[in-house]
Length: 135
Image (cartoon, rainbow, N blue to C red; front, side, top):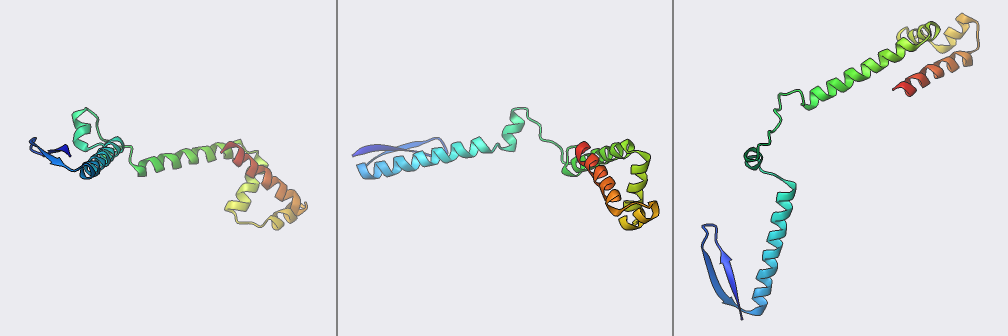
């Protein structure tokens, strides 16, 4: 027989005598509860605890919202794309404009310039490689 102490929420305790088998079960349950409490407090902090310790929570209406971050990323990408376009030679820019904005076919551009289709395709590949390299 061993003595086991119950702890109540109001701060009171009660000690009772229990069998060895029951004591081991109660002890195991206490250890599991302690581990679960440790896991939960290690991974999660209550809002009240954060406030008490002077840690401020970001306002959902601040600049750090997911939408604003995505907009900034999109804006940065757009600036990078513009930088690549500015770095193109006039011939590369005209070819890019004709294919992607003018919706002209590569074969038609090749016929217009009196070159083979592979020459235009190679130029487009060089332009794409510039975008890949700089982005």
